[in-house]
Length: 446
Image 1 (tube, rainbow, N blue to C red):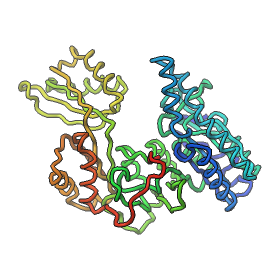
Image 2: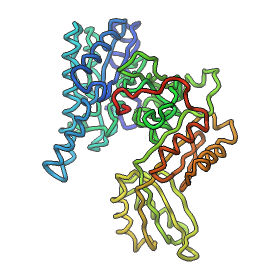
Image 3: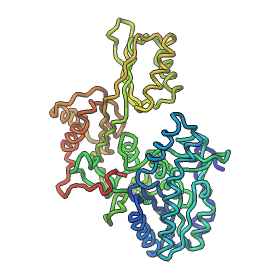
Image 4: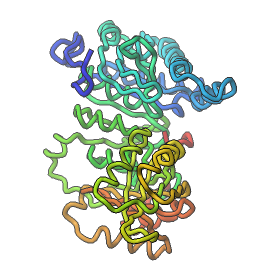
């Protein structure tokens, strides 16, 4: 087994020097829930997989659960208990992907191609023991390798693995993307194709901005920023994994034959002579809350103690703003954003530590939205911030918080004006397409 953070297993039977047919490209294809939503969709996916195989490629497929199966299983668990055991919940939720993988293997076999389905455990996906949000620590795809060497297609259940204690684990929402990229890295695949219900990555969510422009190519650095700040087309950890191990990703639609979007690895970016566009896209996130801690003593160590409590509550802090407090001199107010799902637990932890932290009051706001402008061209083009703030001013939208990175500017607004803000900024940076409106075939964007 690999240590956490080590490179994925690459010395197995499918290492490029050891493949049975080393000249045959290996393609890993991942299909999301909307792509396998029903029997008709599964047959369509099977046809695409077989076409890829017959075009002269070795093929490994990763599938998500059908349609809304995961939500339905969660509802079923909630009807039994308010506090399901994490271990049992993981076992329950992995059933969705197992249904998809078995049905797809049957559909491919019906088309005359050998296909075998494997659970995450059978595929050799090894994880830590964090139920519900496990991280992959290694991949040993021996059974996948044997299926490919026999000329078959291996179908793997995404979103799941097995811990060191042989317990079934899940990787969190969107985890099938990570499964696909990890398998591609371990198998030394030529490309990891992520199939969804849109034609690729767009300059904004086409459900909010119908005039969003499809992106032909984008850097892994920009994709990482977009995924981290609300773009749902790719799972953040999958992008991190692909960037770390230089796995080329091709985002495509399973509902059309359009060319999709290529996510370039760092090495490809360095070799490219093409000048980077200033802005890659606009992401948005309405799943965050804001906590304001009022009247914190303005002394060394106060912020460290406060955020230690937040960290111990398991919250992932995003944006932080500190201001002079309106309560009294010698005090400060600290506001920070975090996932809305972590809001109540973090508030409870702060209240429990109030005597030690010495603050005056707490306020929580779950009606915020975050807009993020991302583009590698920001490094060399002045005036991006002024243009962003000017567009929001012209639209009458107030900014509550601001944070930046080298290639990103994020702002917090009121949730009810977030969609309007995205459209205003998208237009201000000339990202609107003059062609036909973008299509979300399955209605989910995944």
